[in-house]
Image 1 (cartoon, one colour):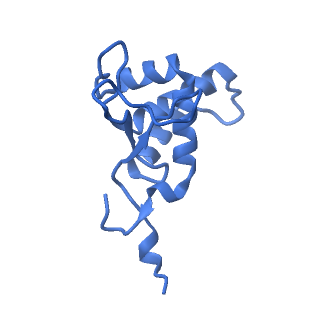
Image 2: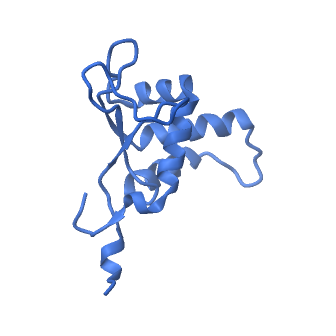
Length: 132
């Protein structure tokens, strides 16, 4: 029997294993470990706060350029990034901070695409309310 409580928003981050953009195979680093990004879901408090902060200066009727929309999306994705595990960029794992995440997602749009797909699947961040 189903219980609504089994489908609460998980406030913790969940892992996204990156896929090779050419083959869709999981990306494995030189140590044989999966390249993983931990992300908060769009329904999490962190994501909602980030979204409000990004939109704080908007005025009703103000047009936003496509370049600004792209920048805002990358900013949001960087803000909902908890951490990187086993990523290899130039032989090093990026720092776990907003600036590193923003730069990574801007430089590699295929990562941005995978993140958008991952967070767009709400079930990735739903579960027992005591999780995460």
